[in-house]
Length: 196
Image (cartoon, rainbow, N blue to C red; front, side):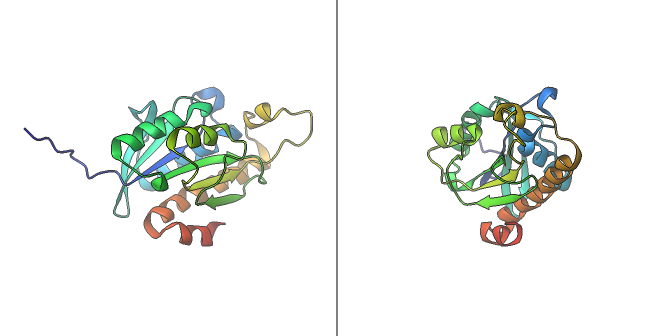
């Protein structure tokens, strides 16, 4: 007997990088998860189904079936959930879209790239190592560098957002959510022209 999947195959996977749990909810390192929250509102979904060691949702954006993933493995192990979903749905690396924070950019700056190195980001490093290379598109949200040498990078990225930084980073997350939709529906060139 043949069984057919109800839904059409997934053509894109979007991975939002962050750490699970209340402790990390409104931190710089969770810029990816914050973007997911805005995208949920924009397209009327909840990323809440448990699959691939992640919270997931399958949605239609334009005419594309897209899987949204918030890994629950903690940042440094983000590659395994992405790889499991890619393998199951046979999605190529070029259709894996990752949203992350970036301390090398000023708070609130947005950058879309077709590919590139991890730039010291452990979540991106793990995805590159486990998913077959760095040839995947990504949206990076600037969260700013530590203001002085008293801060360890680890403590800085896990610090809670507040004040002007919170406003500018959340505004960038709103733009990142819109950019994701544009990448899927109009292509990365259009999104880069508009948001970079």
